[in-house]
Image (cartoon, rainbow, N blue to C red; front, side, top):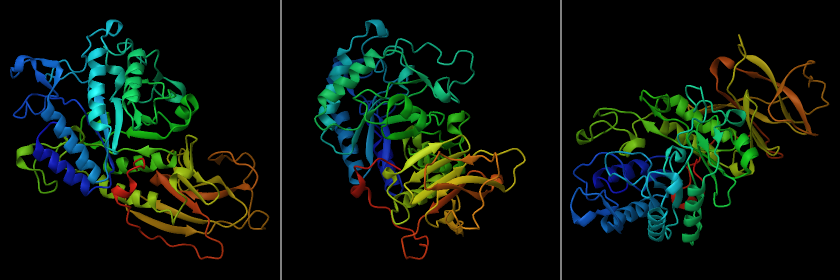
Length: 469
């Protein structure tokens, strides 16, 4: 969206306007091959003013940065957060040299070009309230800023990304990161508005406990919120990359639409925020509305059009997540994952169970979960793909009733451990249709169980301070 084709940027903004999404991640530095928009895509002026020459790191291209400001402002008018990725580490033929402006070697890296850039971009964008800072995408892959970039985080493992080799299957914990630490501190010092700031991982996890990090920005769902909270402390958790809906040959870009939708409920149930991605390469067609001039289309790579089937269902998810007539506000709830079921607990008013792992030869298995004993709760089945909520049954009466049978000896009770006022209750879990999402809601005293009602999501402008769903 930054510094590129104005027509594509306009199409991207139009797609966002019609979508449920309220945050986008974008590179501050462009990447890719040179094209007809070469000059507009250069963040710096060329040396000597000669087109095609290397970048003059002392002279910023004002037209490029003005286009960035227009884009950020347009996103703000849509209520969309602009998560600006400051450093683009992907070494493309054009523009050359911007990943490692201070030299190729981390041990002798010259920080001045980077800190000059940080001072400039923060000065230009810090006044926009919808700006977030992301220091980098997949930060550990940059050898000039991380001395251990070439060290395999999972020696002998074919694919370190699924799962990782760190605690509880997370990615490995990074050793010292002095260059990235210094860049974080420069951003913090230059930003008078204190925008949300983080960094996106790949094989190694940055130390998210650092005071300049405001939230987790994570890829790979094996990096569980509960694990990273235990390692680094409690901060808002954003799964910025949970793989993409797409037809890419790589595993990160080949989720089906139902899998992409379930990633949002997965995040919701564990107390995190999910991020959408799409890498559907579709030739021009009426289905997607792609202009013939675009050729193939990949939203996450270059914006344009949303071609997948997941956004409509994610819009339904967002309506449900924001509808506080059905449950307490999300930020008041606690997530958990025990390897069989993910549990979102909102006090004793609302509990969501997302069963996602099956037992061998299971069919409509009978399982036990803990529920409050002081009152009846309404049980519902959520079907994210069908965008439907169905009332199943009223749970058994409170403990002490002759109809409430305890679990048999040795029976597993799933979900987090509970204290006084909770007791195991048996429920049916259809393990042939996993993931299987069940909710238990405490009706208001003296009222009939509330029926589902769809509530239009608040406009983005009303929610600009919120983290994204």
